[in-house]
Image (cartoon, rainbow, N blue to C red; front, top):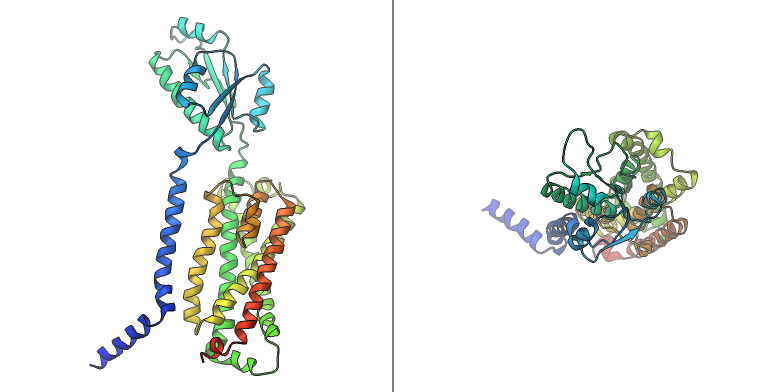
Amino acid sequence: MKLIALMKKEFHRFFHDPRLIVTLLLPGVIIYLIYSVLGDVIWDDGKKDFTYDVAVYGESQITGKLEQAIGKDLVFSEAADLEAAKEEVNAGKKTALIVFSENFDDEVAAYVPSAEKKAPQVEIYYRSGDEASYSFYTIATQYLNAYESSLANKFDVNGEAKIYDFTDPDEIPKAMMSGILPFIVVVFIFSACMSITLESVAGEKERGTLATILVTSVKRSHVALGKIVPLSCVAALGAASSFIGVSLSMPKLMGASVGSVIGGFGFLSYLLIFLLILSVVPLITSLISVVSAYSRSVKEASAYTSVIMILIMLISLVTSFVPGIGAWAVAIPVLNSVVCMQNILLFQTSVWQSLVSVGINLVYTALLVFVITKMLSSEKIMYGS
């Protein structure tokens, strides 16, 4: 009977505490939303609407067939200068360039496959680092290969020993770094802040030492700042160490040299990344402090913080899977820093956007410090009365 009574007590405690119920159920809801959003984005590649502005050098009836196959999203323009057209593709001004060998259609009609005579050529110049360009290249080569097979292999596609892909090989590891590194940095920052803040705020509240401080004449704002500032400094050291380690190891992980990837960034880029990280640390520390001050124990604060960490991870991953995030991101804390760091790593540095993001994060930090000050003044929150 005592066992049943104890079990009833625990069930009663759980089902009559909305905070415990939310803590238990919310992670599942968030995980569902995360995987649903990421799944829709990942498997939506074939549904993206691209407009293909393709230059054509030479003539062939194949261009008309490609227009029929792809539809209104494909626009061809005649290229008078071959080298200039290549430069336009390389610079991203044109989606791709199709080059037909001289008298292509007549050569195809008269060609008899043999080892002695070279087949007529179709060349497609593109950039694999550009989604639209690579999409067109994939669609065009698939169509051309199918058409070639129907003609008994009467021409070749990109059959010469040339470089058709204008994407710099170093762009691939840089692009991967831009997508993964900001996410890892934010996760390390959160972990560093979480490891020291929970015990300092929720732990002292649970042990009663925070209440001892609050009964003195010290200002509540000073207590809040006395927690946030040193905790942020300590967390920043841990986050900086993790950031340096990840930055030095990721290029090697991707098969590139550290110098080739990291050496391309100037002093301004490093300074902006440092400021962005520096603005996120007190923001996350303040957020965890608010949760810790609200919680009745370290265990409860840890449960709430785990849910927040999932949300932070989701925000940090958004830029890797959802393209087209604009300047409006500066208004959203954490996301603004992730977007700015990603742009810096892609050599698309926006100084004003980075500085505004730093300022916005500091404003949110100040608001959270104000909230903590009010919470420290509340007897209901601090003493549960």
